[in-house]
Amino acid sequence: MSFDEFNEMIRSKLSGICGKEFSVSVYEALKNNSVVHKGISIKDNDNNIAPTIYMDEFYTDYCDGRDIDDIINDILRIYSANRKGPDIETGRFADFEWVNDRIYFKVINAERNRSLLQQIPHSLKLDLALVYGVYMGNYRGSFSSVLIRNEHLKMWKTDQRKVMELAMRNTPDLLPCGLWTMKDVLKEMGVPVGETECGSPMYILSNRDRVNGAGVMFYDGILGKLADDLMSDLYILPSSVHELIAVPASEIMCPGELRDMIADVNDTQVSAEEILSYSLYEYRRKNDSIDIVTAEGDEKAATAAPLYHIC
Image 1: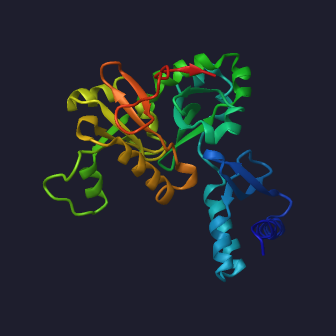
Image 2 (image 1 turned 90 degrees about the vertical axis):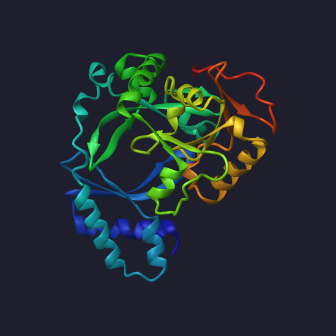
Image 3 (image 1 turned 60 degrees about the vertical axis):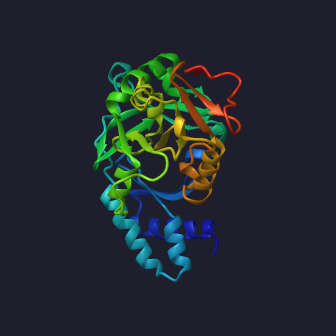
């Protein structure tokens, strides 16, 4: 049975169980880096919340011989736990005065999200795109938000420059920056670490939730302060959309090895939708700028990208 046939079978069975009071449909979600996930959306006709349960793992379980009734029961249990959704003030979303303190940004890969970027306001920086959302509160300890789309700008009677300005102001407060040494992270993971670090020192940069935290590289003063503390320019490795690794440039003899490390991690350790970039970046203290390192040694991109380029 194909994945599509499995989804349709699940939809049909759930429709029969849930009855006319619910709408059950197969839903396609366009995720980061143009990754598409298919799921089952269940909507109570008296509720505007429609949780989507993604089917990939359930399909794998089914192919491995799991009973379909067990899968159905699991789906219903997940729906029951999430049917109310986060306690968000959706009615106030249309009020720009209410949302303007809640607008924030995160970063994604520009090339891999070309289709999505046509539908949403964004700002380009190097090979990345800053995209914007509205923080809607916490749900079960998670940061709940709505992605800002072009139609929202029309509803609010504003433009993307204003949204960008608000996001740059708000994000460091909504999602404060966190800094950890690699030794700290390894200890958290239970990996034995000696008293002295081997090789070049590495620092992990993210927001304190460590979710969609790579945007901290564009927080005002964050890289500059770290570079000043280390008395060195910085090489920035995009570990994922969630975090960055910074190393003092003074410690690195061959930047190309860092670029190879980025490629290896992306190809073997990071899921397709969490890849940020294959580029190696350098923060230069003198110019307070970030460039893409285009070749081994000191060769950089011919012109540093402006801090904010409005599309």
